[in-house]
Image 1: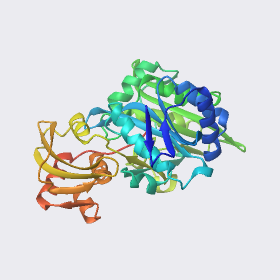
Image 2: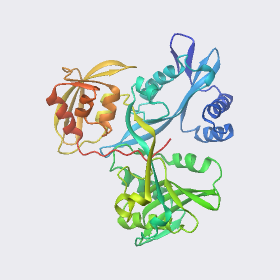
Image 3: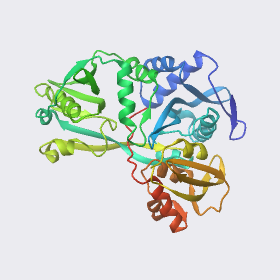
Length: 400
């Protein structure tokens, strides 16, 4: 599958062979200051599961991106999605239309593969917004004084190397409560966690209550002078005891670790630490980083695939402007926890696909989008939109 874009001078297509993957790994390394060997190791491990697309100018690889197939939870359902990762344009080819060619190709490729959503983490919001991605939230880093966790405890015990299938089931059961987390296939963690670099300082533990897995944590250790930094990549806690127990487990490192960092929104934005630490304003610091952005590539499919509150009911006539797919009108009808979408309608509410994607993700109310000039239309229809999706809480704990 090859797409001609921006005239005929930029071609976007799949890799021809592993030499193309090696060239992309070097490009990725030069653009993001990542060792090319690490990028290539990740690319080859992910090769059977992912889609690599490359932009060429006169036969030379100028940029590319990777698609990671997954589900994405919205309203309790896993909507078919492709996580967009490793978007890169070589410095020598920037400002020549390569990024736009890649983004147009991304939208059409994700649709052709039968997915409805294309989430990503944006190093440059301006570019992705131009091509229809809407801002959701920034990834949140929470840094806590490790001694501040020492007083937390829960019934149960921590055990190393929990069963991966049990962890996957635990993760899905827990994450379905939010809008945005990925329903990751089994290979994802293997590639993300076990392939990148040495595993000597990476650890996984499960929390067990009466031999039942109720919590899970994975983290890295980093030496900083005489101390060590604990970097938590993921924490899943399905009971109060597993949450307190795992936090207290981290706190037991107080004699060697001054700080524990929960990276890339590993904890929900409304942090449980605010309610569990005795002095959170003294022991907890939060900082925001790169943005999670969301893109609907198939409006009808995305609306039908997600879950809706069982009490929500109403109809909205939408006119959606998509910089890749053009202007389309849809009638969205929700009732009994399901949606019906048909083409046409009066276009009572008009917006770009970026604003619609942010609304879909439970981070931007339609009435707030209207105040920001991102959406316009009949006030009653705008109120109906917010009633349809009320109650959803957004969280993106996956960084890719």
